[in-house]
Length: 477
Ligand code: GLU
Image (cartoon, helix red, strand yellow):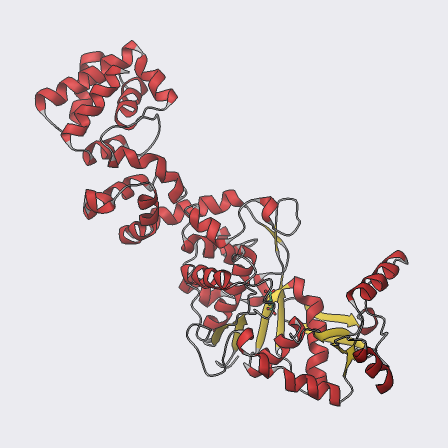
């Protein structure tokens, strides 16, 4: 393909960015970067009741956090803007006029109650709910009468008989029967353009070449293709990827747990890991390899492979992948990602000094799968005392533990902060304890818990007075 492809991600700001939508954004971004094209962001906020500026802000932040940078969008402009539908309202009206003039659209005066009654009676007859065309052929007199009754019309597109066919870039040939679709609303009675109408006009004028979105939009595509044909416009290519499923194989939703990018961020996932997971969800690279840096993702990206069959979201696997990333990112990157967690836990990274904090995080990254997992360990490095968890406290109460801790404490107070191995060896010699019987009491005394980062690294990172304090506190339990 030539370099000129233009793709878009078009979220409606009605909530936080769902990981399923983030995956749609990712596929568009990968497609654009792979083909050297343009990725644009369009905010679909015509429905002022359901959308909110706060959600728009949050979606932009989540996309930036995932490093899915767009080339044109509401915040950075571009040649074919504006990129917010609420700022494009006057652009839709001429096309309604045109469809009305061509007889492809008509005003519909049906009230919500009338439409609901029609729907209920179709459902009662086990027929697909659709508009049966009550206002399709109203004469000018009848229209006038309706207007006099104070009814404000919505505008519907006149669907013609026949099939709509297209070749989906992921799913191959797709066919829709026009009869199953009733005349659909393109402009609501409050003057707001409906989704299908606004999208066609925006995609056309923003010169979108490929529409990549979830398969829940397949039936919309049929309607949009009808609009392209009646407006005499060349439609873009379409690709509908499968959706992310929960473990019960229904569409991933809140009942399955965390679903927004924001939640994953707050739970201590790295964007690198989330992006990698979403890109490969349900598939892997050759040899079953699953860790893939972004440049490689871009060079290997293929739409056909991207989302054919529904993939089950596996939170455990994401945790595992996040752990891999936590261990492989640079110390600086780790510090950047961990800073909100440090601050949230009341640990001031500046108080400890940058080098020390880097060393703390480096010690912790081998024991955790998310940054949130690291939080319970932070007092080990940031507070003078630690609180002993019940298991550690129970262990420290035992006489043989006190012996070990006492021996170690004695070496510390007599010889100062010597090398950990030497003091541990000394305590072993004095008490005859080795292995777990030696290390678990020391770990409990130093960290307040029975598992955690390498003990010698904890020891190295703590100043002598804190080591002594913790030993004394452990002996008092
Ligand atoms: N605003 C629509 C949504 O969030 C966009 C669908 C599309 O890509 O056309 O589902």
